[in-house]
Amino acid sequence: MLIEHLSRRLLELEEKGLRRQRRSAESASTPWRRVRTAEGSTRAMLSFCSNDYLGLATHPGLVAAVGEGARRFGAGSGASHLVSGHSVAHDALEEELARWMSPHIPGARALSFSTGYMANLALLTALGDSSAAIFADKLNHASLIDGALLSKAPLQRYAHGRLDLLSLHLERCTQPVKLIVTDAVFSMDGDRADLPTLLALAEANDAWLVVDDAHGFGVLGEQGRGSLSHFSLCSERLIYMGTLGKAAGLAGAFVAAHPVVIEWLVQAGRTYIYTTAQPPGIAHAACTGLKLIAGHEGEARRARLRRLVGALRDRMAAITGQHPRLGWLLPASDTPIQPLVVGTNAAAMWLAAALDRQGLWVPAIRPPTVPQGTARLRITLSASHSMEDVDALADGLARAAGRMQ
Ligand SMILES: *Cc1c(COP(=O)(O)O)cnc(C)c1O
Image (cartoon, rainbow, N blue to C red):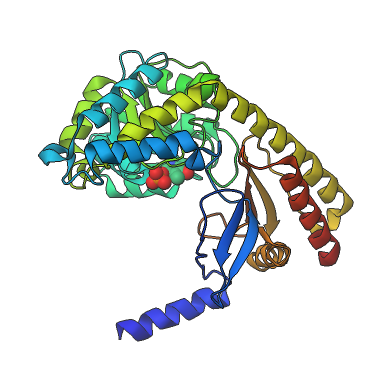
């Protein structure tokens, strides 16, 4: 019965153009990648889908730090943090991250997690008890939505960016604890949340602002310190989640907040407590990752990334201008996430396939990851792309647009 039921549902996905496929890479996360084809041979592709925004995942210094960390601390942590998996490598990383964030969250303490998904679940379930209320942007990442749904707090979702609606909800709320939860850079659109206004609303309504900066940490702000730095924000009411698997090139995440909030996560964050600690060697390497992000090399990579983003946007504007009937929407984004919204699932799949035939790997993102009717190509750039790579993508898009019309 189960197999028949699931087979039917898989068929439904297929028919709606929603069935997803994995692609196996044979080489590391660099723009030019060798991938395994369905026939089992190897093919080189130019990819625009990684969140390794600074190209640090293959940085020799960071790769060496992972090896050194494993030699010193072993390959795995062996247990959860509260049993015996916590190490001085985690302490060192947390202390460094607390120093990073304390200009924006005075007196902050930081706590490391195995993944951003787990950090968000821990945050929202541990803080979202029955005395709390959660207010969330509708386009927040799935991990924030899941965390809110798993919590005991009532959830109020507001239309994307509609802080006027959020303000009304906050004024009406009678729960003693109020948590506003937002992506800092929205993962499928690349636009930024208006964090200064959100923080002002939090302060005016005795609420807390939970900021998920998965796509801003390492990329935005002074020395890549993230979205709070970008907007020069400072408040004890900020609860910050950053990830180490994107611009930091590794894996893992952290929360930085008031020490009492962090201590409560240690005591009550179920996805902190009941999971094996991040390998300490990775925590050790993350300290090297932070140095790379903040140093000259990080600065140079961010500058290059901004140039690539500008060039791609210029080319995309020219193509959509030449083919207005396609109705392609240019992203309102100045981040490395540059989605091209094409509308139907079929159009997005067709376009991704047309690029694929030209050796360009750009994923089509469809509902439920994005709202119905806004299927898109999610183009992401990395500092390790070259200007020629961006030209190759734009040429491919122009050829596909010509054929579509
Ligand atoms: C990727 C992402 C996460 C999850 O982080 P992982 O470390 O990959 O689990 C959380 N929030 C946002 C906005 C993300 O893009």
